[in-house]
Length: 288
Length: 310
Image (cartoon, rainbow over all chains, first blue to last red; front, side, top):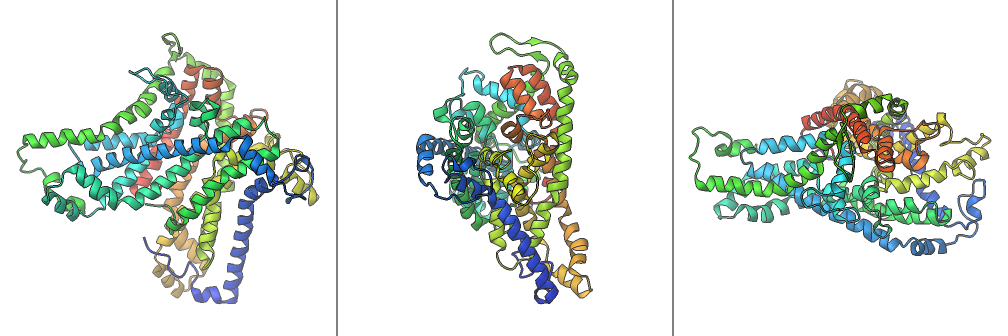
């Protein structure tokens, strides 16, 4: 991919002309306005979380509370037991990403390097799963999780009930296969001459050489799984196991709105940090 | 490139003698894919086939299920809600394409022109797609709240009447589409930006020399060059909007007057609130048919490019 050249559609000279400056100024103004609209819900939940219980219901535009009550955040954290919530979400998303990376990298190695007889058929099977959205088989998936075939165990109220379905990520398999395909043939040949087994090649060459793409894929998946709603809602019935999304949704009726907004804002903080970290990898978007 | 380097794997003529070692290697290779195949079988292929089987059964969790032929489908097609739900999806799609499809294209074009702050805006636009959707919706519910909600307060302060955003059948769909655009635009902006940055600057320089104005360059060069991405994004939007669930589930529970009932919402209620798994499976099959049609085209288009959009 070509790095950002020092011009867009307009050349630098055009950008410096009066008309060019006006257009760029207009673009900048539109983007600032869009930025404000995008940030507004974050800002709103932040300040609503600072209001006391009478101020939050007062009509009229008061975006910043008269006397910010920072104690709401402490109280929300404590009363919602957010430590627990965050830990659960971390375990669910982290375990899910780990499962995805293990399953997908093995599958990609199989498709890219081992290529035994019939590997094309495996590829077709993986492509088929890409074309069928999970929502279309949610009901039997839930029933499978409630009663696993052959071993008759229920995964409801266990983290395995999420890790196993999350492990299926055909997109990740394809992206990793492409990454593995781009590893120079000579590296494998040299390793073979040295008598390395496929296991060693996988662990010592393929994985380390694809570490950065696996990191980005893992991060993106982590953010996605961190916010997943429907499957955790079905699988995690026990409130002490619920993730941030499910727990905050269930708590809406039982707590005052200012506490709830404070809790919501806290829940948005970790993804924002992830965004700052991801930014380093977002040079030209997220295309592989 | 890889195919050239290893003729022994790809051109089996003359066919090499297959030693015991060869078969051992084949078997070990399948050992590597075994966990993946097993998980895919239990978590994906099994449920997909079961959906189709269930849609012809009265499913009981405790006793054996009974075959009921087309009964579930008769019930589904006989229910006016079926048509309402799919009509709602069609309207959601039209509104979201009109209101939301071009937004990321414009934003990406503008960000791409800026010499400074481009990365900053990119991060800001992407922020909403990172936060848990359920949490975002809980905040938006307060923004749209009929009395005391920020949006109505803002409208009042500039002299406009307050609206029942999520309680008025005419406004609920656009109000939800605004949230969907807010949530989803960021990811598309990133994809369009990467497409824009792949366009060689020489093309623009040549066009400039030929006297094309910047707007003509956008119309005759930029848009045609990103149109294949736009096609893919359009399909993706159709697939995503087709499965809308969380927004109506949290914000409107399908109301007012069923104006935001969607097939997935009705599927959820049928299965998990009324335990009518057979009927829910018939709904699933209807979703399977519609969504897979678009998904197949989507996967084919994205595989046609050398890179994959994630």
